[in-house]
Each structure stands twice: as C-alpha cells, then as structure tokens.
Length: 349
Image (cartoon, rainbow, N blue to C red; front, side):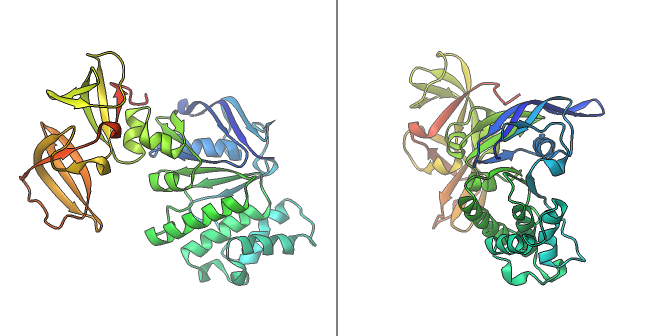
C-alpha cells in the first residue's frame, strides 16, 4: 500500500516545536520532494513517517492506514539515508538481504529478491564485493537496492546524494528518475536542500521553513509563479524588488513597469519577482539601468551583478564575447510576461 498523509502533524523536542501542524498528502506513485534549509522541519517530517519520532499531535497515514503508533519495521517502508549505512563486514548481496531477513522472508525467496533489486540498480555484478571495494555512488546504489528489496509501498530518501560529488550526483539523479518509471506504484518522499534535485526529480515540491509548510506545487508552478518571497528565493534564483502596484503594472523607484499579471489595487505595496535568466542586456521593455558591481564567468553563461537605484540585480546571460568592466553602466530589460508580483511582506511566515 502506498500514499502518505500528514494529518496536522506536530513534533516537539524538549518543548521546542520542530514540525508545526503539517498537512500534506503524497499520492500513490508520486515523488514528493521536501525542500528547505537546515532546521526547516523536512527531515523531522520524514522521520515521523519512518516511525523514528513520535508526533505530539496529529496522525501519519500510509496507504490510508494510521501508522502513528506502529514501530518502524511494521510500516512497510524502505529508507535510504545520506551516509549509506551499509554493514562493512557484509558483502553487497548480504547487505541487500538484510531487510528481507528482518522481515522473516522465506529462505527460498531471498536470493531472487536480492538479485532483482541489484539488477534494478545496476549492481548485479558487484554482489560479492564488500562496501569498502565500492565507490560512493556504488554504495548508494546498494543502499537503494536494500530498500527496494523489501518491495515497499513507500520509499523514504533522506538527502541520499549530498555526500556525492557533482558528477556522481547528476548520474544518480538520472538513475532515481529511471527507478521511479520502473516502480510507478511506489510513493517516494525525498528530503533535500538542493533545489536542482527537487526540480529534476519531483512531481511536486513541498517547501519548508521554520518548521512549517510554506508552499506546495509542481516544480513549474513554484518556479514560474511562486506564492511567497521565500519560495521565489529558495526555488531557483530570483530578483526580488520592492514596487508599488499601478494600473497595468507597477512602479519601481519611480520607473513604470508594464506587467501581464496584476495584483491588488493600485497603490498597494508588492514585491516584483523576475528570474535572472529572463533579464536581457540592452534597451527593451521594462528597462533597468545601473552600474556593474561584479561579473562572474560560469562557462556557458556570464552572471552580472548590477546596482540599480541601490538594489542588487543579477542577470544570467549567454556567454558574452566582450565582458563589461566593473563600473560600466548597462541597461537590462525583461518582458511583461516574465515577472510575477508577490504581496509585500508575504515571506512564508
């Protein structure tokens, strides 16, 4: 049985609330990423599903069944943590079989299930090796195989790629996406502070901060039309500029801006959100003029930091053949459809 439901779940340690009234549903077969900074409550939420922490209020349901009072081994979940947690004295196949033995699976069934999980994760040829004979990425594949061997309805992933280098992380993301396609009925709860992982893998993202759920939606929804300043800043880079709502747009530091999407009545305060890659260099609609304070070359792109009326604006541009110098005056612009207005003060609190 798959699917997870947090029913107003709160967790507290020594009187301090670390998860505050979380209401969230992970549908059967869905990948839900819990995204947020350290201390936001995302790992606590995952541990509440695993049964490692007991809520002080609310219920946790898996497959429609209330598991709040059940021990971890009776919840039918698989879990992969950041540091692999493999037994160093056991071979790969023994590590993968461990959960099956704990579940008291029949001896005749175990070899086939182990082989199936190793094949699924591309580790079949490493069955006889010890963890010390594997790379970090291979060890993480074994940890995933161990979690899958028990055929869980729910798979919990707690920052499983954070210990890997960038190249391995990219490869493992592709492998996890492939596994999800092969296991369409398994619900996955994926905890990360890495927005790229969340945007790449998740069907939906739950944004956490200060023990609370701040926003939830598809990656496209949260990136293109964030509901709060916190979401705008945390899910992708964003320029957040204070403006006053006007008829057909907004006013920024005395400059009229044309926008496709309005908000509230003219005269209200708001925050303009525009992504750095949607800014272009040169004259055009919604011009922002200022001086360059920093230039960063990033291979295929240049990032410019521009002081615009005392506000630091960043723009990600295709690699420039001629790099502007610090102090140069430049003009940036953006299309009316590429900006979003957020209510002033809506930071996700």
